[in-house]
Length: 101
Image 1 (cartoon, rainbow, N blue to C red):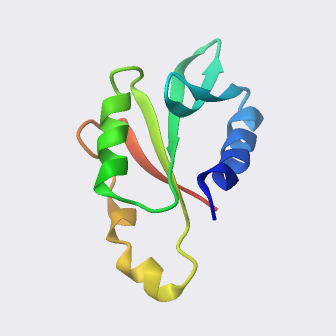
Image 2 (tube, rainbow, N blue to C red):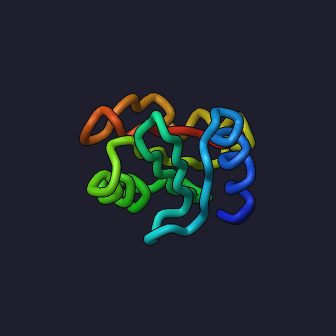
């Protein structure tokens, strides 16, 4: 799986919520805009890492609503070993760990 494979499910999700969705805006993988809501930034990665978390924290300079999207682990062992799924907040409450399925 590549990062580009994650774009369409994320785009579809936000468009269903009424957002206009753009890719690769000012270094952000996905930007979702809606008139009556804050701008949402989504960073896409194929694996969860400290680099991804730090990138999400950095994106908070641009928006309070930052999501980190990674594919759901494909085997039970990988799911068990991915303890990050239990994280509810990092740095500020608005950095949310989200999985693309």
